Length: 217
Image (tube, rainbow, N blue to C red):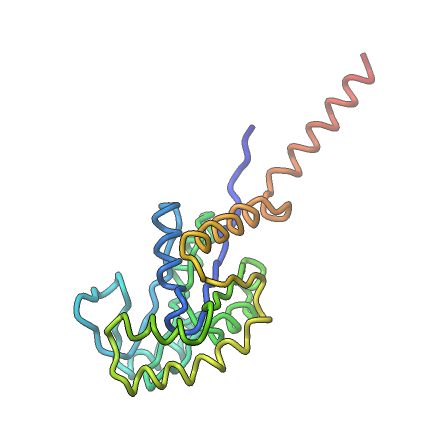
């Protein structure tokens, strides 16, 4: 049975900072190595251990702005004084080849992609923390940010969470293993949607031909 090549999915994972979208993206890619990660471009400086082209594409404000003007970004936004965006070309190439792409982006980026020509490819998932206290604990446990930055992230979380209803799926990340299992289930189901299996038209046509041949004998 030749199932042909389906178009890839644009899997958008969003959450307030610290709720687990980056961890879940990494877990999904470890589970299915065919998944492609959309590496964002940013104007912020690299953190210790971050690698160009693997964690981010680090660009100057001037270069980033020109990329936006030239239509090279699928989405872009300013977050905590820095600009972030998803380069268009590698995503379009991957989707056309039938590879699913994971986006680790906020609600603004997700909204822009859903409203773009790529909207039909989108599966959007919002991840909620089990509580606000746990969200703050996770942010502090990371040890990456100052108290002021953590307070800014906590303040922004309320606005982030207010957009939960715009997403196709909403998960509470109270147990990382259970959350990953639910994400796998969503991905498996979305890949099996009728409109994402172009081979079915030819297959069912062949079944109808078998009925006709059977009736004529």
